[in-house]
Image (tube, rainbow, N blue to C red):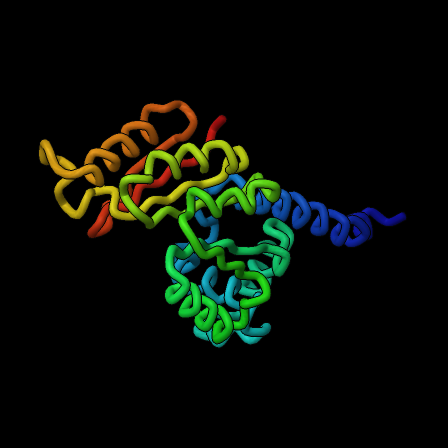
Length: 217
């Protein structure tokens, strides 16, 4: 075989191998929460549109950049997270708020994958424990129960799962001594998240403070 034909013969298998390795690293990176690998625009432009395709069809509605990368991200998210197989459980104390949430989910086209539980969350959380482990727990509820919600998250998140908690700054008063039961509970929550050994934690400086922890054990 002429030597000049060797590069042509192995070009496509070599390219396929490189792409396969790149895909493997990309999926691993998504699972590990690594930074975006493309550019600074990925988080603002490509990622939201790739995720939106799961509920709004395959038209990205964004062509300022070639859309091939958006479609690639959509495929990767479908592989990594199960695509349309993901579900959301939300807990509302009042039936009124549950009805508002149901209508919002219906308009967004995700009603079949969003399950609304009405009643005190510390009681209704038991309804979904058999489905654990979960990927993410978001806490924005009565502040007195924040430590209890954190314990629930620690027991029912998968390793590598994320807990997020809003109002972690205690409405700007977390640093003040004294206060009501809610402020004391927020202090206990923040301390347990940071020092309890179950999470690797940080605080995102939003206006109200967004506590974030990745479960490590």
